[in-house]
Image 1 (cartoon, rainbow, N blue to C red):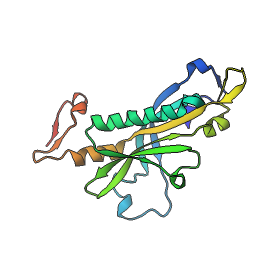
Image 2 (image 1 turned 90 degrees about the vertical axis):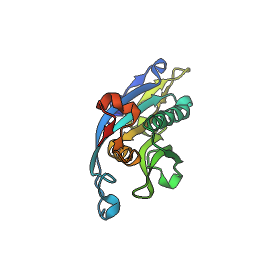
Image 3 (image 1 turned 120 degrees about the vertical axis):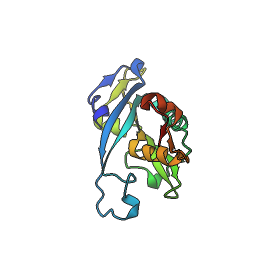
Image 4 (image 1 turned 180 degrees about the vertical axis):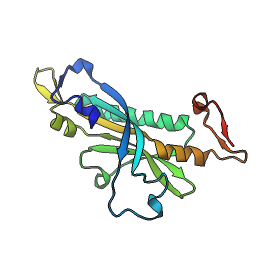
Length: 188
């Protein structure tokens, strides 16, 4: 919401499209009635951080952008060496504002289930309509932009997936792509 709100009441130059942003955001979740083993640990934290990817796009190109954003997230998971699957959510599972959403899930052997680590959505004109985020088309008439948003990686679940999927007899092997950042390749 804060990133797209930077464009409230804005008419963007179509030559500027796509507009791409990334943000590191704290997330807060309050779920009344949540209890039990499925909400413990890193699974359902009430506060966590994630990396958000946001695009403001021309309506003719928003579904191509959605595929690119999903490919970006999948590339991150591949670089981390994590096995994943992609779900195209059905209408009943979509959020109220989304026109199409893809979830990327990593398998948790310890919990014996797939855990969502990323969700990428095309909101088409829903957010832009509320924002009055527009561009002038070829006929010089204002038209609503499309907005897309993705949680590139939900950090607690990615951390859990890295720790769980890289266990060896010697300790936990750090994914090669992270070694330059950690300065070590093993947690003993």
